[in-house]
Amino acid sequence: MNLLGLLQLSDPALPIGGYAHSGGLETYVQAGIVCDPVSAGNFVQALLRTSVHYTDAALVALAFKAVRAPGELSGLDQLCEAVKLPREMREASRKLGGRLGKIFEGLVGPASDGCFRFPRHYPVAFGYCAARLGIGLREALTGYYYNAAAGIVTNCVKLIPMGQQDGQVLLFSLQPLITELVEQNLEPDRELIGMCCVGLDIRCMQHEQLYSRLYMS
Image (cartoon, rainbow, N blue to C red):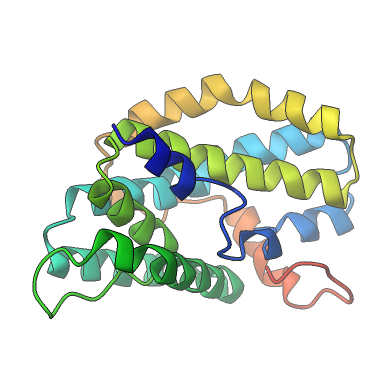
């Protein structure tokens, strides 16, 4: 397993712009729903158990397995485009995927012939890169979940605000949940992709109309 490749690919500080997106958290904070370490923990767990688990992480696993099937990768891109209903979330996924491609496309190379197009959406691009870098599927999923959790916790620290120590305690507490979800995603059910928390989608759509905001989504 390429440990250094995994660390680089899943590094929250990777310059793809993840820091600019809150994934709807900013709306929850302005509404007073997420306001302290307890409510922040509830939010992070709900997000990991629903949208990340059934959609993003499932697409990571499917893209990982389809690394040598450009047509399948393109189909997963289209599926990701279809199931991300809030406009800002679709745009965020495209932006992150595009920037990930700029970093890794020249490093991992195309999967097949000149017809190959690097995946456009972030989870599909992440799964493709992980496979091409020689990272195991379980490790790739763990890195993806950790990256998602760390990004949300960092945003909680900034927005609520809550202390850095509280943030690290929360991130540490998520380890058993991440391990559990990773095991479930090793053989994802394609029929469940797109199953999400409806409330989250609504809050993400409301984010577009916030009077003031720090994040793009």
